[in-house]
Length: 402
Image (cartoon, rainbow, N blue to C red; front, side, top):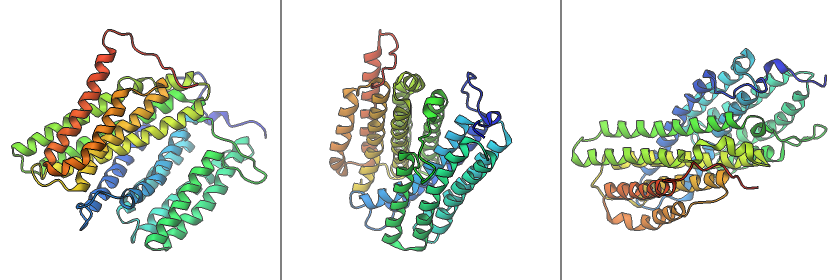
């Protein structure tokens, strides 16, 4: 049968609105972000880690665990961008994925110890199960071949994920790196398979406004989680003048992160993708920029949890790396995102990142409260230059790179 099941697809020409199912699914990632932040905090609490600059092994291990979780969110977003989330089969796939995300998140802090099989096994089961269900739904239709191609690759990388769960220490990390790289490269190449060919999913070209909304909402969830982390750290603190000052600066920092994102590129991503000659490529770049910003928000939230209980204590090197590194990573991601929308990068963002990086070694001589204040002042400078540049001018239209 050469056609496709049109009853499951979003209707062409209808508003690309986000439905309640998608917002419900995103609630699971509140738990994901909390687990990621907890893992980073636990690493900083290990003997000898806080006394040195946080190294690639610690951050790399966390990023490795984050990659399959981001794939789960991405495939759910792609599913609801193409298919009508009001249809029971689509709802079943999304809710099953949500359940898997919760199990993976619960196992995340121990994924390199006893929870490895739970983490990897759930990821593989959800990915393969999702594709088998979609192949059954679209049996005899052209989309069955597309899902079959994905199934081939997720079966191959799934073997690596499961094999890594039975390995130990560095061997597990190495195997899982290969598995994560396989997942990414397969998607990048269009899941090529013998007798099935290859085909990249043109989802950004089909639903640019919808996916732009989904990434905006996820970034807002990350910002909301940072507010929660800030508030919880303050309620567990001494509530004295120093902790209250850290709380106020932390809240101002989160507001600045929000302001820097949404003015102005964050408001018109969908328009920029629509105007692009290569919307799928530009959409992938925008998605990557969002994940960088979200990771920066998570690190910033971890910084709040470090500063508020010890505002005038000694700043460990790893603390300075997190407190300043989170905003630096966020601004770097935002600069990349600005290029997606306007084909340029504002000089204040580059200067801001350089200041945050250069200041980090000096911050070990200052209390954590002043390190957090430094980050807030740099962000305030970026936001102020944005406002000054826009004053008296019409709203800038998107001009994506050609």
